[in-house]
Figure: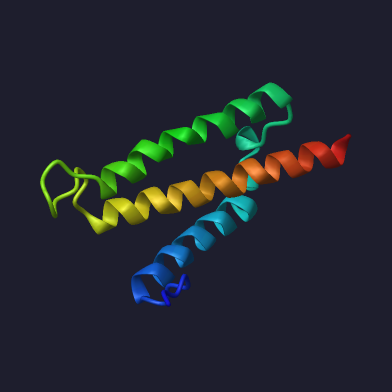
Length: 102
């Protein structure tokens, strides 16, 4: 039987970076009024533009030669993951606030 629960320290660190980024996106980003969007097209554009993270994540894991990914740095991966969390928190906050105002 293979467990689907990962308990390695690296996976816990990745989840912590995503949670911290999400927290920053939901609490500190709203203090900058220019980053809070109220219009549906802008929020939709922000949501769809997060697709840019997919090739970045793949570049951290895929490689042409075995053992060396295109972005061979854990720090770059953690920065991308934190930015993904920040954008997740800020987009979700914009969506929740926009729906609450209606």
